[in-house]
Length: 362
Image 1 (cartoon, one colour):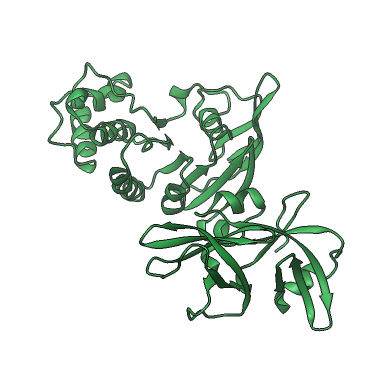
Image 2 (image 1 turned 90 degrees about the vertical axis):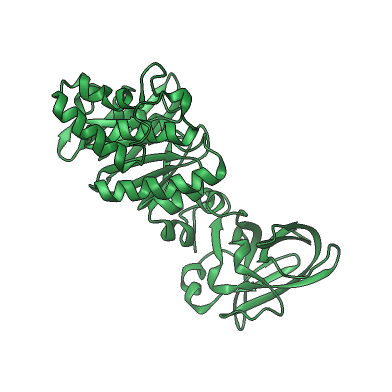
């Protein structure tokens, strides 16, 4: 548990008043762009950084000012940090020797960890003889061999190639589930966070923006930053006014009119029509006309400005009076640049944000 945690470097607030309860045995992903404070927060938990203010608890134990060696934690770094002059076996054994385990216990734990990470046939090799993925497995084995209270991982897969990264994601997650160890995993990759984390903590400028399960953060972002950071391509943001007609409320801007469903009206009925808001909708929730889609829809037209042909999907950039509208369509869709295209907004999937504060209204 983190209570009011702050870490300043001079006047710079790297971590700014973080309050967070981490459940025993869960996999928590710390997600955010470079410089948002996620690694600093991890280092505060590990004891590698002294906090400016606030408290760090493991269960009911206040460990804020304990040294790293007294916290019963393990940490896996981005750069592997394996000893080049030691074999795989000696690398894994190193923390056990520091803690003065018996030789029999050290051997038993090395074999257990090596088999768990599928590196039991590599024990006599040196790191230079290993691939990047194998070296990272050694680093993970060395981290878990002491059966830590908390496992901290700082972008451990970012140096791997794309295919190996996908494979290692599933292996790290499965390993964590098997061990049941509380794991805090730093990443800037939203796919890693969404696929691995039991919950995700989204950070920006040292502040916790939202904490929740992946479906909650995707479907109900707390603000514009979270909405824009989660999802690829990024959510469309369109400046709009709320207007009223006899048949209901509408979000209106030049070239676009979107009716609000009855279930949303109570939330926005008191908002001023003179103020500007931001309508948000994800590219995957805009459909090309002619494709059968469930739910209530609102149509608009635009000229196809650019196509991203990903084959599995086609990302369409439509030119509208208010700017560009990005649509994610099936890869087999036949569409040409410069043609006029009608698209449909899923009215159940729209979001509304306060333009001044960025906070979510819908």
